[in-house]
Image (tube, rainbow, N blue to C red; front, side, top):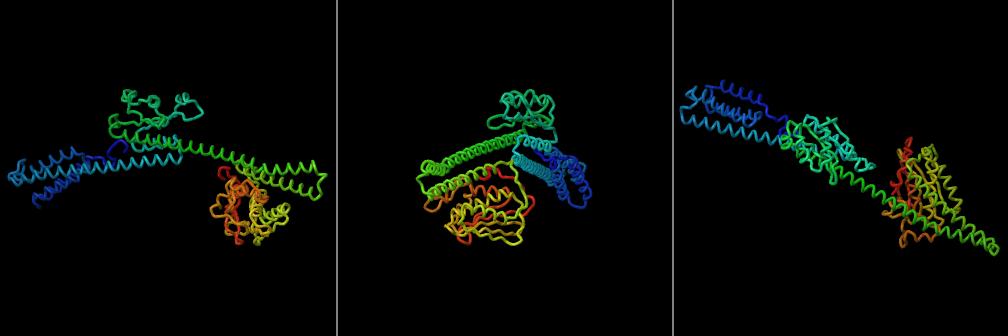
Length: 525
C-alpha cells in the first residue's frame, strides 16, 4: 500500500468483471420476450455498473460499447442487425450507451477515491506508528528497524537501510567511515546507501547508477546532518518516484525529526542535571560556610577562655563554658551526620541492612538518646497493642526518629508535650510524631522535605532563627527523613496534629521484603 494508489482489496480484477457481464447477459436471455426491451436495457445498465467495480475504466468502457452493440444486434428489432429499425429504438440504444458509460466512469472514480482514502489512512497510521515506536524507545536503531518492518509489510519487497556510527566517543571522521546496515543488503546496495549518506547532493550523484538496478535511496536527515538512508526495491524508478517516494521521504524525515527531538531532550536533561548538581554543591558549600561558622566560633571562644583564663573563673562559669562547648559540638555533629547521611542515601550502590524490628523498641531507644541532650523534653509514647514487627533498617529508622523528635522540639513551646504513636491500618504500619508548636503551613508541607529548605516563620527569615540555639540547622533533617522513607517504600506526609501543631506521618508497607533500594540524591530535590 505504500507505493500504489490502490489497496489490494480494491485493485481491478477483470475476471470478476467478466463473470458479472456473463451473468447480466444470461439474465437478459432468460427475460427476453417476458419483459419489454427498455427493461432489458436496464439489466444491461445494472450489469455495467456492477462490473465497473472490478474493471478498470478503459476496459469497462470498451465492454460497455461492445455490450450495447450486441444488445442492439440480438434484442432490438430488426434482430441480427446492428442498426435499429425505429427512431425510438435508436434513441434507447444511444441512451443506454451514454448512461452505462457515465455509471462506469463514476464507479471507477468512486473506487479510486475509496482506495486513495484507504491509502492515506494507512500512511497516517504508519507515520503515527513510527513516531510512537520511536518515542517509546528513543533509539534510532529501533526506529529504523520499525520503519523497515512497515515497508516490507506494505510493499512485500525487500527494504534495506544504513546508519552512521553515532558513538560520540569517536571522532567525526571515524564515524563517517563506519556504517551499520539493516536487512543484510547486497554489496551494490551497501555502496549505494553509503553514497547516499556521504553525499549532500543525493539525486544528482546517484540517479544514473540507481536506475541500473532500482530506485534511489532516501536519506534520513536531521536539521544538522545525514543520519542514514533507506532503500526499497520497486518494479521501476518511475513508479516509486510518482507514487510512493514522497511518503517514504515523509517517513524518513519523521524519523530524523524524532531523533533530533530526542537528542534535544537528552541534552536539555543533561544540562538541567548539571545545573542542579552545581546548584546543590553551591548550596551545600554556602550552608556549610554559614551554619558551621557560628558554632565553630563559639567553641573556639569558649575553649580559648578556658585555656587562658580558667584560673580567674568560678566553677560555675567553667561548667557553663564546658556545656557550651558540648552543645555546640553536638550541634555540629548533628549537621555533619545529616549531611553525610543525605550523601550516603544518594548512592544507589548502598543496600539496606534489613531485619525484623519492633517499632516500639526503636522509639524507646530514640527517646532515651534524646533525653541525654534534652533532659526536660516531655515525650509520650502511645503504641497499639499487638503491633506487627517492621522489616527495616534499624539504624536508619533511629535516624529518622531522632530527626523528627529534634524538629518537634525546635518548633514547640518549652516544656510542651510531644506524642509518638503507631498503629496498623490494613496493609500499612503508620508511625506519627505530633507536637503542639506553630505547625507547618500547607504551602510548606512539601517544600520542607527538600534539601536545604527551612520554613520561614511569620515575621522571620529562614535564617533568623539561627540566633536561637534551638532552631539552628541547614534544612537537612526532613530531607533525610524522606530519603529513609523512600528507601523503605514508605510514604511520609505532614498534617495538623490534634494539639494544633505539626504531625508527621510515615506509612510503612507491611510486606516482605521491601526493595532495599535507596533513592538517588536527585530524587530528593
